[in-house]
Amino acid sequence: MGDSELDAWFVREILPLEPILVRFLHRNWTEEAEVADLRQEAYVRVYEAAAKERPVYAKAFLFQTVRNLVIDRLRQKNIVSIETIPDFESLNVSNDDPSAERYVLARQQIRLLRDALEQLPPRCREVVVLRKIEGLSQREVAERLDITEDTVEHQVAKGIRALARAVYSQRAPIVANARLYTARTKAKTR
Amino acid sequence: MTSPKHIEEVAARFLAREDRGIDTEERERWLAQSTAHRIAYLRLKEAWRHADRLVVLKSPAILAPNIASWRLAGPLQLIAAGLIVAIMCGAAVSFSYLQKDRKHEPRAQTTNYITGIGQQKTISLADGSKIELDTNTRLHTVEANGARAVTLDRGQAYFDIVHDARHPFVVTANDHRIVDLGTKFSVRLNGDQIKVVVKEGRVRIERVDGSGNALVANGGEMMIAKSGAALIVSKTSGEINNELDWQHGVLVFNQETLADVAAEFNRYNAKQIIVEGAARDIRIGGSFQSTNIDVFSHLVEQGFDVTVRNSGDEVVISK
Image (cartoon, rainbow over all chains, first blue to last red; front, side, top):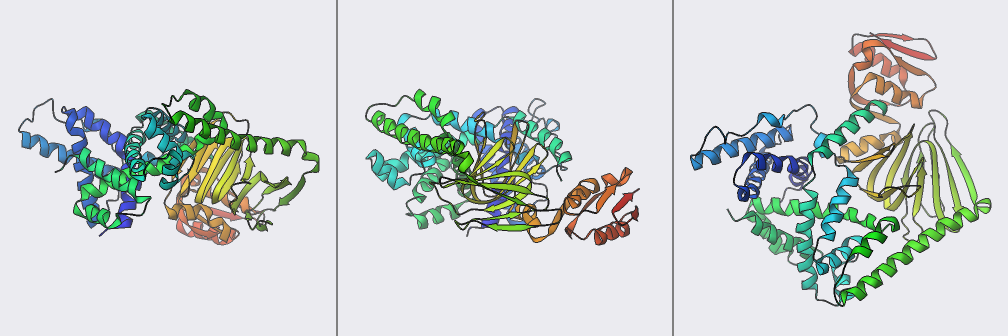
């Protein structure tokens, strides 16, 4: 069933846009609780459309999809008013540099990951440290901590979700800086 | 639609179980049930892969303050203490090996390797590792006390390293050190800029003076470091191959300016290409033999509205 090429495309082109996507949703959707739901729905629509035909400009396509989605939802709720018309202009979605958002300032990401790691509950943190920093397998972690593999698994699952929040929460200036930096170095390389 | 939170919980559970190689059929069934399931799974899997970068916390400079600030409860404290000791020992070993290296420097065996303009050369090391030198490159290897160290003085080289956790392979370039964690990668020096392209495996990149955080670049990533700032960029496998095509004597360009393209050709040839005026901004793509300037300039002349003067020791392209 799985299409690994499509999966790779989604991971490479769409997921790095999540910080911008979520920020946009927070700004334009009053129900905070529904943001995760909208994000999921937008991803589903993009993924299913891309299964038929890959869009050329991933970023533009994602935001077109989100725009349609938001309008559909507003229509369902029957609450279209001046205030709720999304601020699409502020997005400034351009096609000329589709790869810019893929850039991640690595030092910043490590800091976010480390902060997330330090905020984990002790046992969960211990398990993640042994898995990711010490490079032990799940079985070895279980033996080292003298706990069952089921417990390790439970803690790893918890750690994955917490670290995912850190990975996908990069702030806008980081992307902007990275882009500036590449623009400057591009002129000098090659 | 099921709530995103619930889907994420299930996806995280499947992912955590993957390590044990169980429930794969159940996972495939669940993934096939809906696109939302599949996406939640891909999203967490990618984040968990990014978390591999945490391995840099192993480096002593970062580790010490952080571990110390971790308050662990009950019996875990003992385990944590053991863990710290184990890591510190590792750190001590790698430190002492570096110091030894310095102390015995006079007795260390240094070998220089140099390629001229247009030359390429492959070096085979005793441990089975291979180094390919690109044009106009100079590097020297230092063998002492079983340590494996190379300094890139200029140019570009590709490293295909046989991993040995006890003797990490270290490449020094300017103020950065690249430590292999089992890998194939290239390093290029261009003025004060360092570019590392990782084809497979992983490398750790750190400042020689120990300042700043270490970074980890995975296969399919490229790192550019310059005057204190460093950037890691994800690349498709095609882009990575383009970056490494010089090994086959081929230069690949993708909508780059003629000025940049000429600079790249000039690294490989004594005969230099000079691009003047508006011609500098023309963008071209394609793949070319790195040493065949005449064919290249002929194609440019035919394809664009430019004047090409070929004087024997240089080619001037202007518009």
